[in-house]
Length: 106
Ligand SMILES: Nc1ncnc2c1ncn2[C@@H]1O[C@H](COP(=O)(O)OP(=O)(O)O)[C@@H](O)[C@H]1O
Ligand SMILES: [Mg+2]
Image (cartoon, rainbow, N blue to C red; front, top):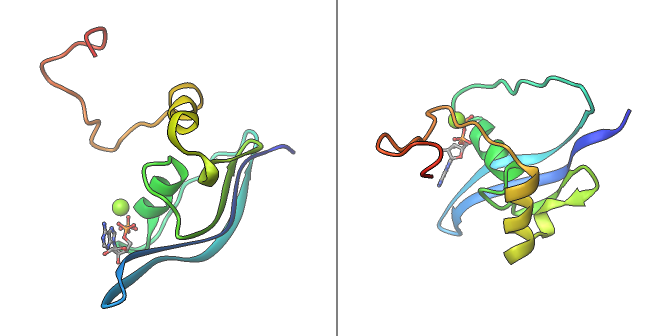
């Protein structure tokens, strides 16, 4: 089966030397075409951090994330903009909609 998503030894730290939080501690997994995946865990276990890194909202501290054959942790500038515009869909839990605008106006 073709890999849609490959998470390769990623770590994510927040903060600095004096106050460091390790939110993701060296995880790896793959998702294949057609798989339906739910991420479960206690509050504070890193679910949002993981999704933010997969969706390019945030950057990993180390490791790589591949969507299809593309290493999205290496994307920058216009390549990153193009990727977000053309290849990524994201439905936020709280929608983040503008009450005063229609979909067309946005
Ligand atoms: N922007 C941030 N700055 C510092 N620490 C953060 C930040 N976001 C999340 N954390 C910390 O990272 C850990 C994982 O948080 P999070 O990914 O929000 O977990 P979950 O979504 O599973 O509840 C928690 O210890 C949280 O306090
Ligand atoms: Mg969360």
